[in-house]
Length: 345
Image (cartoon, rainbow, N blue to C red; front, side, top):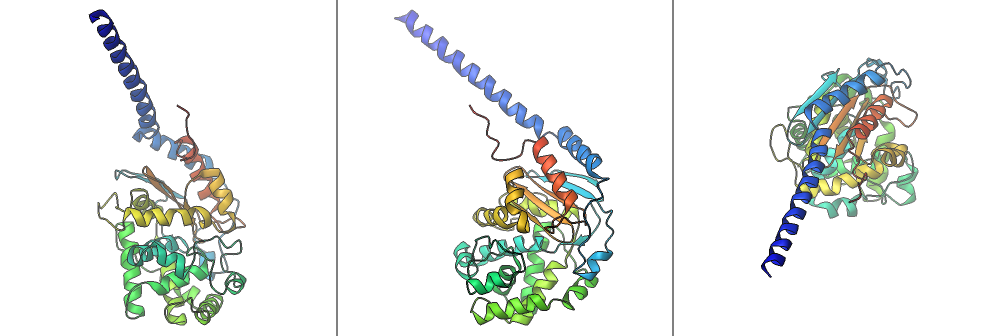
């Protein structure tokens, strides 16, 4: 009886030891992939591999964007424990453009709850161009989402504040909290956009006619134009995306910006509508929620691990930074960061 008992105990302890060793090795492999040395090496490889890519061209439908240096190329990655990794022109400024939409969406969810976004704007991909008027007309302002222009203008109109000044200050403050520093307006870009935003004004008036805009159409469009003209760097974008990756707490400043529940409802819309017409292609190849802007930036969020921001102004035909996409896909592959890459047990 005693021999049998001790034999079972020894076998149990042996199994526990083997399990611990396997688990430890698995954790060690994960830790090695996300080690400081490996992250730095991967970013350096990505920078060297793609820095001489010349395809794509600056956006020119906003005249001031055509004047941005097309050679700007910066990469930044921020982990959820606050470590910052950078290479290239990571402090060079470009306008945030549509990347701002993701963070205004998060702000609305935080202020009014996730159901407000679903009920008052929508969360479906439209299957049409990001500035489509047909998408508004077809469903009378419904069945859109906050990451295309109509839904983004509607989201901006929902921001709390008694007047346009209060709403703008609220947006600026929240975007700055995500970035961990006070952001500023790129006035030449704002003036350029404001002088030529008749299509967005038309979208705003059409939404208003269907009861799907919640503040004055002209003022809502102007606030939206300002939010798109905020200056950011690759480092700023990485901190902003890392805040989402960290459940709404800025990993650098340690300040809670939004709740984990807000992040939970923000990331799925980024996954389905973050890169304009190529959102499905992007998600298929990376597995990461992301958002692009025609200023040349792209952010991507690896939940629980890191956020990455890349800036390179030349865009592909869909309006997404060409080099930024190449870099992020490369980093995701090398760091084995695709959440859908599941190793069998």
